Image (tube, rainbow, N blue to C red; front, side, top):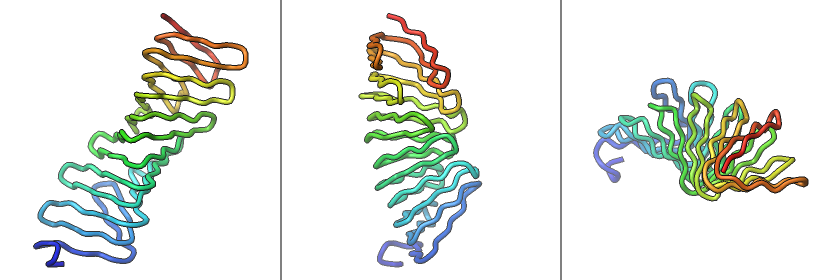
Length: 188
């Protein structure tokens, strides 16, 4: 499409791209050959290593950097959890996802909300910051900074933290909570 620039291709229909081990699908896209990048629109899906699927309305993919920025109704699904946010940056080099506009993570028993989140898909660890709220059937935790592993289901909290249940209200500045085995350690 010469209106968009030299060496720009406009693709419509069931569009599928592959890059290394990742597959990207969408309804339409612009492929920028000179910069090894693409913009994809509508029903965007990225499948990474057969375990992670990311969905969104718009994808901006930079092939040289191997980064995917998805916006609009973003949902990332892996076998342990589902993350929803409005904007997600996925680094395929490091297998990490990052959001800074607020996100919600849901696993088997927990729902976690925060403004900032970083997810390492290899270690299955999340790092959350700013207005972190973890809701479990037995308690609600408010924290400034939290690390959570979706495999072990252990939450590590740093900074001012309040945990409220029917029986207790706990305030501390450091500790961990094993949500699966109902074990905890609090300090400060």
